[in-house]
Length: 160
Image 1 (cartoon, rainbow, N blue to C red):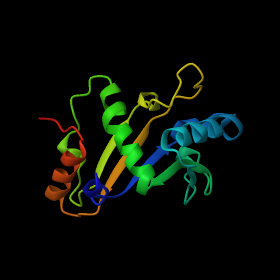
Image 2: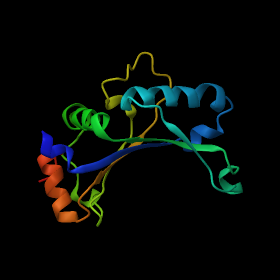
Image 3: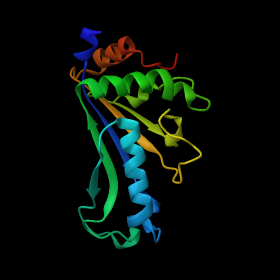
Image 4: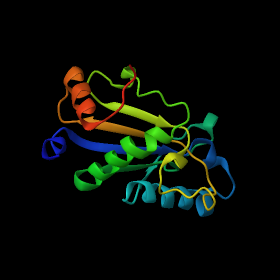
């Protein structure tokens, strides 16, 4: 297990609020709910991400919260990776493995989830907001082929 620690630099979990930000009760009900559930999933408080500039077509003003981000390192990263590989990915409907196209030339592996409910910390009865999230695994080795091999050793299931 000690050699596994050395292969990943960090895991970044991101939630884009998108259309939910147009809801009238977004700031006082929806955003705190997403914040709370993302904290449950990752074990760490998310940091809000504001829009850098106003975009009239999307009804976004500069500074409005457009997403939440969590960066995991160390023990929390290892715990999250274990839950991701052993629990969350197998619970995804019609999951056949992670496509190799999800690994970019720097070796970063990005996995998108349509629903956050695949994580075991989420109780479907009490969850009022349904949102998707992206998980990016950033390796210490920045070479694609070596990073893919490291992911395989960490237990990430790739498509055959």
